[in-house]
Amino acid sequence: MECTVSWTGATGARSGMGFLAETGSGHTLVMDGAPDAANPANGGQNLAPRPMETLLAGAGGCTAYDVVLILRRGRHQVQGCSVKLSAERAETDPKVFTAIHMHFTVRGRGIPAAAVERAIALSHEKYCSATVMLGKTATVSTSFEVLEA
View (cartoon, rainbow, N blue to C red):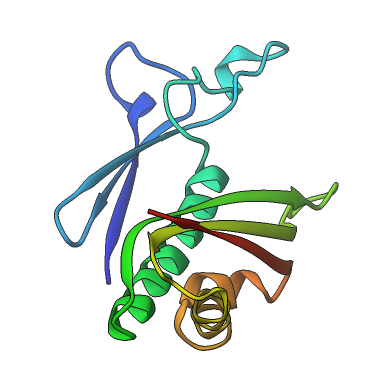
């Protein structure tokens, strides 16, 4: 896996803390820092997600992918899946995630709560590299709801 991240303020008249990531799969992702009123040259322009927000979103995508795949393999009729993540970070550098909560909403026909609970557990214990890795510094908790479609 490869990725090249380039500072967008390095060329031209732009300044700030924007970055463009070019992934090995041929996609691009824009990231930006938070504005810094005290020193604008050190802050971003709020034009894109923060790098840590992107990391959190990646973990959400990784685990949601697993949950949908596991439920489909179990022949459940999944029609929707979303996960809302909330995280806390350490007060001092490095400001790692210290707590992450993921609330899953799964929509489909006749999906047993036990199947959703099992899919989430398998993702977090075995398949989702992102949450397993983040779990080294953060307490990862989950909750879920199943909505009938």
